[in-house]
Length: 355
Image (cartoon, rainbow, N blue to C red; front, side, top):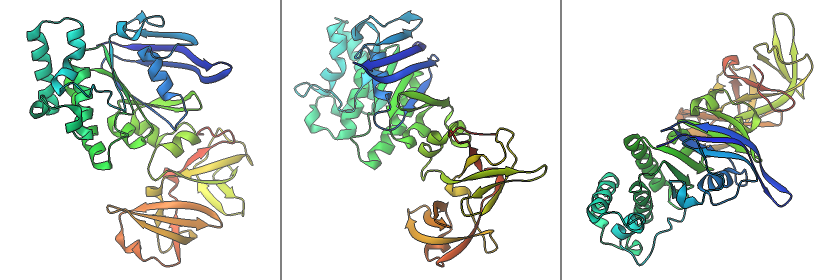
């Protein structure tokens, strides 16, 4: 396995910039997830690491070796695609062993590698089958097995679960995590699904508009998002935002909404009195209380099975509550809520977190 070092990497298509200077160091054996909306540049970055896209400027190093000019076959990486990319005329065993046969490995070596990967992925009963006789989840396991047998320096995953239904995605997430624990392999995983990012990653790289917005452990991004984009993208349901202005005295601070409603907050040294600010609070942190400070109009109730999402409005500003309390399934038209100050996030006029 190996570390991967990305230094000042940019990508342009003609005069159109896609990546705006990415710096990222991935440690040997680390599982990194690149997450962000469609078009943020995450797949482009992965393909440049793989050698499938040229680097416009900057350097990519794998195991301390600059690989910008190396073809994919010489980078010693294995890639698992969304589309599986299996040969339909080959059996599962032949698909998994193809790269080893190209390298003219000994027959015994190939058989041992295929058996070892099949054991890890539960593919032993399917080795003689062709891809058309497999389910989507089984095909994705074969694609992973084909990568495992190569024993590469790094595994690259390009949205490998997006073609699967919700139940299979959950199962395959667990299998990928177990595979990483067993192999200790350096892995880079691309997804737009923040649940995949939260459950799989050692560290998440949140991207937007070709720029890395924040890098950190999943709960770091959840608990202390660096900006409004990360706060809104990480978490399901997403964070609530209420816009207003920050006001503070020596012993009191508040965000005053446009209609004059004041919401107490802890003082923030990085904000000037009267400056524009956005208050953020996660849906599970909003408290329903008979004597709550604010009245909220109930607009919609969404039972999800495990919990319930309430869609509310305070003086025209919409927000959500996530609760496990089933008594809210038939709420009053108006309820009372509180925003605990310890769970409030504040962002400045530029959208950056203020502590």
